[in-house]
Image (cartoon, rainbow, N blue to C red; front, top):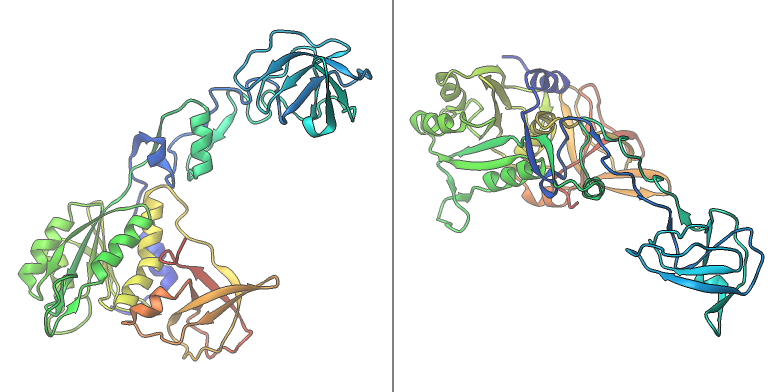
Length: 399
């Protein structure tokens, strides 16, 4: 099968999936997920005119001073008296405005006198230091549209409406199967073996993308071992396989998937790193065959799997590319789209991206230092310091 362009591969993937079914969850579990229907306000907020400051509730046109303090109103109190000319109420932030008052003088602009009196050092305009009823939202108004990705602030707005639960898209269940006779588990180092870092790293990336990862196991480089674990993985929404998708004598991933009835759409993409990438589907399950090299696996996850997981949750699939300038030259031959691990920084009003020294597909240290990927198109050749480029934030960078 010939190499296909990155954009075409991603478009094929996204065209084959549908958002997952809704489920009702606690608000705290809905953060980062998309709502499945419009949400309207059940309450007017604020529910009454209230003070934005600690101070004194007054009549704006009352030029008298000093004023007699006839009441003290704290947040949660109900005012008991009406403010008339020559009077005021001591009021705290968030407390309801008493009838008759139409302004608040902040405490710093007053001087306390004996006998429950206060002298005003300024005379405010009507409405000063007041939060009006409904200035946040009116009952029945649209709070969030369908598809809204809920932030922590959004959760606060929902709690403010007295809501405890909300309907959001279900999280995708993602099975992860690694393979390779050369691998061993973390904490079980053996002579001649290397640690399987791909499985825990991919599980962490899936979790950060909103999915629910399950590490099914690590297969031996045998067709029967791969087939057995893949069969378990196909019971999930997504199956991610790691390694075995190339053309080596023990690369049985494609054979095992096809034997299980998986319809493979493609398995080579015109990109570096990550060229040996397989994608297919069986029923509603999506299958991604990622390369075994750690950095190739992480890059292909960012470019293909992460957008799919987001789309399945009703979220925008693609993270916007950002315009930047190159902080160092990059050598490149036309033909493949190149993704270069880099760090970025803002200088003045310009974003600069500087490639890391190591670009080895097996270098985990270059992943830990990267905050973005510089993306250079298939037709691009060598690029110099200061040239324009596009960068993609990576999900494995610190938040």
